[in-house]
Image (cartoon, rainbow, N blue to C red; front, side, top):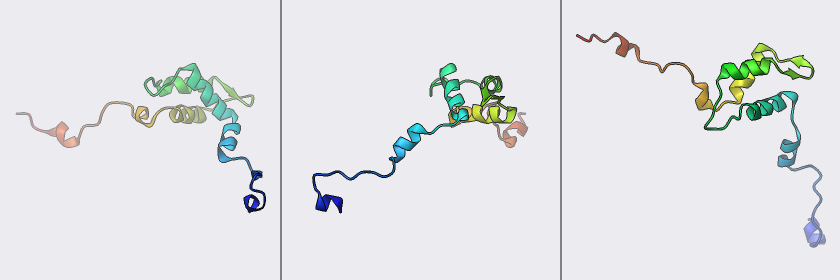
Length: 102
């Protein structure tokens, strides 16, 4: 409607665009996760072990308090790619393990 009355005037946005909000808002825990990504130089090709990440988080403080073990484990999980979160030995089917090899 503004453009119909004043075609040369751009409308003024009353709220910041969603991208502006997302780039401005953060929390101490999110900042700590970003620090860990930089500290360990984590990339899609280079993923750190969860145990190392969790130990690093437990040694850090957020808002003056050390990070709890539960939170450290959660943050360690969240900064890894989902494919890197699958650790341990690959599963074998029970049938394969119990087959008679005679």
